[in-house]
Length: 254
Image 1 (tube, rainbow, N blue to C red):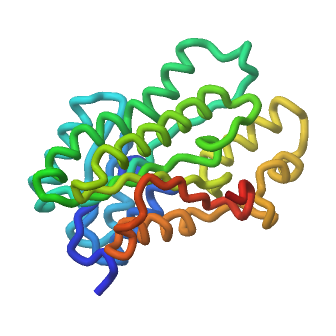
Image 2: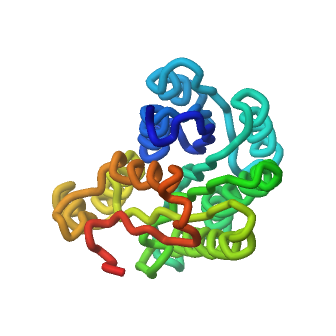
C-alpha cells in the first residue's frame, strides 16, 4: 500500500515534465490518477505508464468549460476528486519593451487563469466531502523578481497569492492549498530556455545552462518535485497549508 492509496487525483499538464513525474509518482503510491493535457497522444503514453485505471483527459486550461468537464469526468469516473495538481504552464523570455500584450495574456491565461478555472470547478465537491488538496506548481519566480521574465513572474506571483488566499479562506473546511516552487527543472521547458539564451547571446549550450543550475551545480529533477507533491497530498501533509515549498537546491534559502 502506498501513502496515496485510494485517493483520486487530477494532474493538468500531465503529458510531460513535472506533470508526468507527478502522475507517475502518485500512481506508484496507490492513487487513481487522471492525466490531463492538450495533446492526447502524450497523455495516453503517460496514462499507460501509470497502469490500469488511469484516466486520459484532453484539457485546455485556458477554457473554463474544458476545466469544468475535466473535473466532472474525475468526479464521475474516479469516485470524486480528492487531489488537484495544477502543473500546466508556459514561459517566455524577452526584454519588457519587447513583451507584447498577446504574449502577456497567453502566459497569464495558462499559468494563472488555468489554475483558477480548475480550482473553482474542484472546490464545491471537495467542500461537500469535507476534504481536498490543491497543489499548484509555481516557481522560485513566484517569490522573487528576475529580468526578462515579467509575464512569467507576474503569473507565478499571482498563483501564489491565489493559493494563500484560498488557504486562509478554507482553513477550517478540510481543504489545503499549497504551491511547490522549483528552480529550473530538467524539462523540455528549461531546454527551450537554454535554446533561447543561446540564440540571443551567442553563448554555448553549456554556458547558457550554467546560468540556470542550482547552487548544487545541477538542474532540479522532475522526480524531486513530484516527491514533494506526494508528501503534500498524503495524510502526513495535512498540516501544510498556504505554503510556498522551495525545491531549488538552496537558491532562495527561505
